[in-house]
Length: 236
Ligand code: C5P
Image (tube, rainbow, N blue to C red; front, side):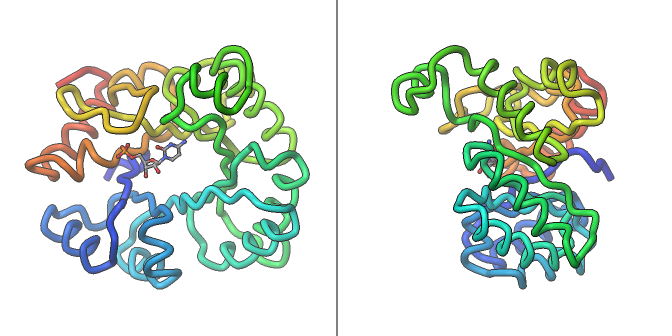
């Protein structure tokens, strides 16, 4: 079982999720649970996945006032997931309190990850809508540095920023990269995309793959192709 390829379970219910995993014999693979599924099913979905030995990245992208985030993380810490995340844009105090909530009173292995600039965003949107001037990779570096100095274990970024972050923040600082597409599949709403093979060449730690697998005619085969490209570092 490859432990670095996280399958994004962007389904509307546990029933559909379970059916997808069973039909495609994907029980036990590392998975990412996002807002769609968690807001519908709640913590029960995490327990269900745990029972089937899935490693879980809980992608709720918390972004609120520091105390609220700290208390939310205190609740999340009891779920014992592998990774959970906050938006770096929430600021230093919010990140520090998130870490506090995750670790105080319930020390566990859950890693805290900060989202930098979403992979669905390009330079133009970042400059013109968020009014953040300059290049995307410079902003990602900035968010990575300041998140690291406030206690996170790694960041979510695109494959195009992963190598630079490793050089600047050190090899142990984790990079989690969505925006992964198999050749010949739809880009959808993502902007900074790359193949699993390219992700491997850039030294990222984890890739997150959703629609290239879930929308494929044969999801099982698509999953295997992702793992093969990621493992061998060459396009199959
Ligand atoms: O279908 P696709 O492969 O684009 O799915 C990517 C998944 O990763 C989605 O669930 C999305 O919410 C998530 N994600 C992302 N960009 C981030 C953080 C998470 O695309 N910065």
